[in-house]
Length: 459
Image (cartoon, rainbow, N blue to C red; front, side, top):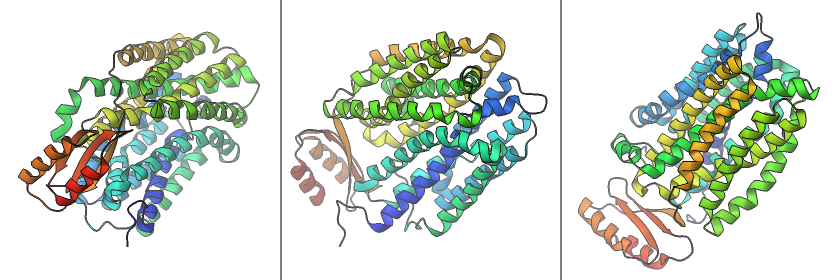
């Protein structure tokens, strides 16, 4: 007998193994961040800052172009087949970067890595392998893996650099990618059936609605700016730390580790307060303001070691708050039937931010110095702050999904209308072709029994 409150062993296995694939993708991007600028400057003939920035950002450009097409291709050609193909491309890019002896070849390798854009296909496979009531948990595992990968990378990158160097890190990423393909083959279950999931996949038919939603556009600009500032920062900060700290690149983890610990300690209570007290917008706007302050601190103190440490601490408190709260706000604001499309556009905006941040940050650093990079980032964050202040406060709701018996489109419309009248239900969408009801309900009080009875009756 299935226990609806628990994941089955198969669901847990699928969620954990696919989260590990996501984690690998992030490690491929994050591990080199704290050390790459230093390594690139020591390549034969050196590497200009603008090329360093392009190498860091190239990953984002190809990922932005291909992640939605890969997700849609997985509907047609099969989830695992598309994931194998994407991971093989990623491994090829890693090999090219590992064997590179100049920055131009590394840029090519990074672009090929990004072209293995399997994120959307992996998300679709998660949806195939989990019941509706557990999909949020599975997605949360993936989100947690991404956050952990970033934190671990800032510490592990310098340590690995000491043992195997940047080429070795690229090679290790390629090896882990091959292992990931084996995990897909032998650990991840095969779905009994694959179908489109509105909550997890992008639909071309919903793109217009999502792209015309002013609230979602604010959030898309936000994630673009957040990751542009992140990538621009890593063009400059490793080199600045090298000059001001007396620490070689292999020991920069001694700076990043305490900074990350402090930032996580500060993040958790703020997120809990924002969610439980329905103060998410307050926390969100405060975090953007803090991020703006961090950029100004960087601009003024980038030439001083303790100034860099202080700026990094403020930056990562704000970054972790924003990275954790943005997906939650998207989920609350996006129309229930458009959540997957909204997240697809959001993820594409993030990847574009990586590309623009690396490229523009490297160009500014090369021509105008370190401070100019953070002034550029300050402008982006200031614009985001203006947009966020004028944003509607996200409703205090949670999203739920319920599986339905087979019904006609007309019956689905009637059921949606009845569900909309249930106390505490803010939005109800019934998708007959997917066999699900999508509800947004008040976090503190809603009539679950009444909704469940209507769903069980199917009317």
